[in-house]
Amino acid sequence: MLNIVLFGPPGAGKGTQSHHLIQKYNLVHLSTGDILRGEISNGTPLGLEAKKLMDQGLLVPDEVVIGMISNKLDQNAAAKGFIFDGFPRTVAQAEALDQLLTSKNDGISGMIALEVDEEELQKRLLIRGKDSGRPDDQNPEIIKKRVAEYTSKTAQVANYYQSQHKFYAVKGVGSIDEIFGNIVKVIEELTK
Picture 1 (cartoon, rainbow, N blue to C red):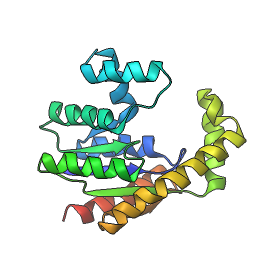
Picture 2: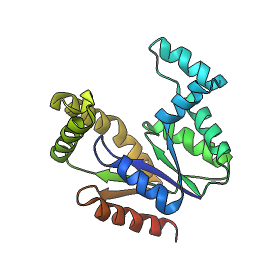
Picture 3: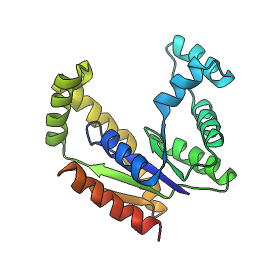
C-alpha cells in the first residue's frame, strides 16, 4: 500500500498536488478537517465527542482524531493507499499514526514535503485570497504568522520521518506539472 504524508506550509500547493496524486495512483485523500466534519455530520460517537469539545472551544484530542482516521482506513480497506493531509502535525501524532498503521499491518511509505520560500508563499496566498475571498489569505501579517507557526511546530515532524529515512523534500516552485513530476520520481523510488 502507498501511504504518503503530504507536507508543506500554507500555499505550498498540497491541495493541487493531492488532486493529481489521487488521480494517478488511485489513493484515498484523508484530510483531518474533512474527516472531523464528516464524523460530526454523521453523528458517530467520535463525532459527537469531537463536537462537544469544539463547542466548548477546545481542541479535539489526538486519540479522537486517530480513532476517526482508523474508521476511515477501515471504511476504505480495499484502497491502494492514502494521502494524509494536515496530519500528523506533531511528533506525538506521527507516533500515534505509526502505531495505528502498524496495528493494521501497514505503515507510512514516505513524507513528501513541498518546499517553498516565504516570499513565494506570501505571493501565492495573497493571490489565493483575492480569488477565494478567504480573509486569512488576504492579510500579510496573518500569512506570516501561519507560516511561522507551520515552521516552528512541524519541523520536528519532518525530523521524525528523517530519522526513519522516510522524508523527501521536493521543490514546490515551478509549473504544477514540473512539481508533480518531481513528486512522481520520489514515489517511484518508494515503490521499487
